[in-house]
Amino acid sequence: MTLEFRKDETKGALVVMADERSMRPTHGVKKGCPFCRGNERMTPPTVFALPYDRLRGAPARMTARRAGWRTRVFQNLYSALKRKGRFAWKDGTAPAFGDHEVIVETPRHAELFQDYSNQQLMLLWETYRARYDELRSRKDVRCVFIFKNHGAKSGASIGHEHSQITSWPFVPGMIAAEAAKSKKGHCVFCKLLKEERKNVLLESGHFVALCPSFAHFPCETWVIAKEHKRSIRDLNDAEAQSFMLMLQECVRRISGFEESYNIAFHSAPKGADFHFHAEIYPRKPIWGAVELGAGPVLNTTTERSALAILGGRK
Ligand SMILES: [Zn+2]
Ligand SMILES: [Zn+2]
Ligand SMILES: [Zn+2]
Image (cartoon, rainbow, N blue to C red):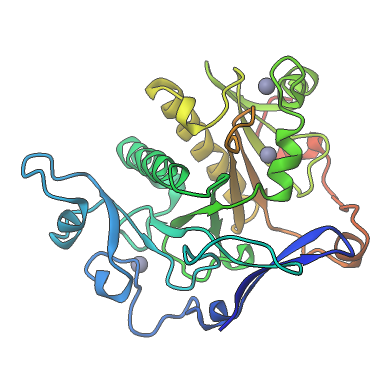
């Protein structure tokens, strides 16, 4: 079994070689869904669950066993990263050191993110935050990345709604590139909020959803904090609620256009300034040789069309 980071020096890219992941179950899981309530034995043990059993003061794991959980977290059985040994590069190779957890967002198999109650949405937020704090506090962690895959074309292997949270001993390339341009006072996201006002799809007191003019995917939408906030830890309750409701509304609209999507939650790496946002990629096109073998991305849908499709302001 191989679980390693490998440097691709020809392109300055990074590969996580994880052959165990080829054993992952796929959509048609025969023995039942491991993410459904009652099937907890099919996954590694619960490391966190909500709501807490506040009265009994019982640990989250007990709560999960008592079958009352609304969100549940456990280690990814087919991890791309593992907390084992020490992180060190040698000849362009290093152990794939880090954490990789699955967050089951709802006990109900067929319930979709866009249909969650406000309460369920906020339990999910609380789960994101708690795991973010925990992973960030661990030794040798430079960056925590939360993401969500939904639908067959997104890379999701199980249909039941879930997110994943990962921790890394370095800052992954795209996040590092954004961090380098997110210093307060010279922040590319603060600038974007001003320059792309006409591409705003939704707006609340604390957040803006916009279709960037340089989107990689048709109807790609970003949810960006109006103020320069560094990470999900910096949002108060009102801001968190505003964020989750807006994210949900974006997914609701996008799902009318394309079922499969990914969400990347971009927060500050340790010690860096940043501008918190989430990027939603609707996975309509299949990328070809220009995207894979040259770099430029072909997008067939302008931001004007995207706003019209998603029902934004004209
Ligand atoms: Zn299920
Ligand atoms: Zn900013
Ligand atoms: Zn970003």
